[in-house]
Image 1 (cartoon, protein in one colour):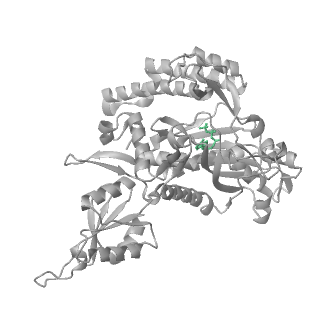
Image 2 (image 1 turned 30 degrees about the vertical axis):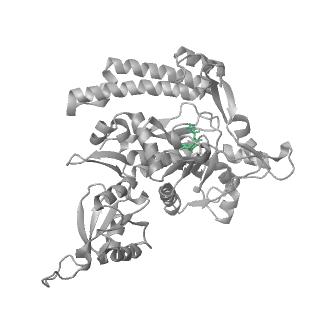
Image 3 (image 1 turned 90 degrees about the vertical axis):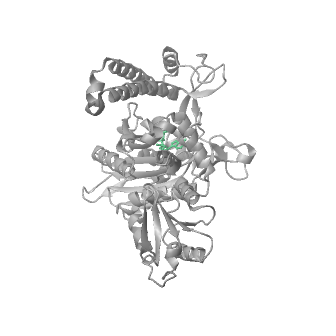
Length: 530
Ligand code: ATP
């Protein structure tokens, strides 16, 4: 099965061919079914802030639980933390965020719209990548099964020309970013002929730096020294608690500290729904290792994190690594795991080898020694750190958009189905009495209460059964349990025994296949499937 967002599944190519159209459907579906609402909507919303509705909060919690289980529960040397959002202001000086957590911004003088200079250039590169993709798709159609992508992209003249352009832009762009050369960035935008998507002109301002942290005040006395920042990442809460956790937990290196929490960034261009928000949630893990072993651990976490993504059953070609050309001055390796969102490949998770930068800086700024005594080496040192950092909301968007499909059925009708991984689905099963009489609702309620302690359940008795199935398909419920007369009547009118007595129909969301399962067996049956 190929990645949906790129080529669409067969049923999607007809109805959701256009990626923009598809993305609009994702946003509309999320709202219509109570997954995600614009924040403060009755006051016309607040830019790039969203609220998770009754189903969204379930899916989001399930994603967080899956991450926590994989990182904390399944690793005896990783423990959790829940540090405060407010932290001492010097932390952000030490971490470098006060001085360097900037994005280069540029305005278009005609549309008055503001952009991130680096994103304009990356989008330009993505457009050239799309051209390569189109060439590949055309060739694939022409050559059919015998198409060899690797051979094609290394020999086709048009593809090679596009690739050359990309490499040249990348090289120049990386040099400019590394040198923090803002004039050079503007020149690159002009040279590439990048136009404002709104005004269509190249009438750009100079590029300026813009700090992304939100500042606020603490306490009743207002003066400069009270300025606090809403944390732009959760990681610093982990670094400043390194010794607390290490000592109280008697942790031995290598070990990790994991945390899930809110982060805030005053993003210049907040768009693409929950992909780039001003208030969002991160799941971060800092893994402390012996200096000199960090690149092995970096490789380890790079692979392990990709496996976590693949464990949801989404095809591997929806993911790719993007190794950083521009390394932060403190990092000695960094990669992104990118996902093919409906608007192209974009960062989903970052894995960074951060050396001893963070602990050393906090030692320097706090005056407290943040070191580890290694009993095997009989020496103290500042541990090196591998960080894995992933956005909850981006993971939500990746999984949700990949799951949403419109299918044409054999009878020509269509259905919208959200094929979420079973373990992430908000409701695991819905109990549906076939009709609203003859004791069926009572039996259905009994089954609902039987299963409720183990899983999130829905009960629905309104409308024809087909419509109820469609409603559950649209919210991603993997199983519908239908209670009919056979479930409750042990003998027919002639007194013959009913073989289906005490059973229900279980309908599977993705295949729409149905099977009879005994009510007694239901808890074990569903648990095994989930
Ligand atoms: P980008 O380049 O897309 O701005 P970043 O490199 O600044 O992302 P990191 O600082 O590495 O991102 O943050 C780690 C993760 O947090 C990202 O991979 C992403 O999943 C998530 N994230 C970062 N910024 C946002 C945001 N504004 N909205 C939603 N998620 C975000």
